[in-house]
Image (cartoon, rainbow, N blue to C red; front, side, top):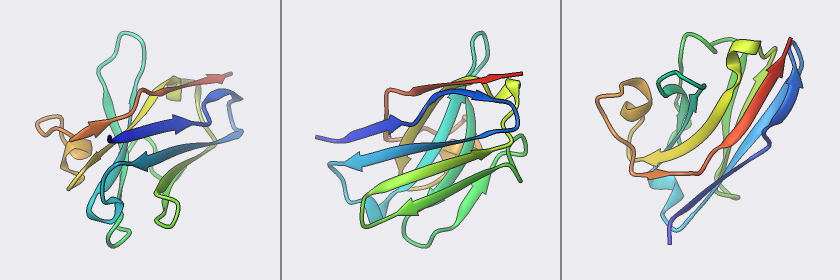
Length: 125
């Protein structure tokens, strides 16, 4: 059974830091890319970042570039999203998802194979 389980969400002050985790199981981790998405109330889902497990290549949306860092621990089948200097507009439910490529993170025209259930991040001003 494929599982993606997010953790690490919570309340953080603007300018602080928070690390989200996505633990994956049930598929060959090294063959997949893991992406992070977010959805704020009343807004469309947004692709935030992605990492390819095979070679570590990464993608960041402009809205988080320079503040968020994605990394992968292939031995633990876990991907992290380090959120530094978060802003109130980063408040959202954050989801991780897996697919063979990062295209689904870059463009909503593409899908992702597997999804987690999400973790809420609230950034206070």
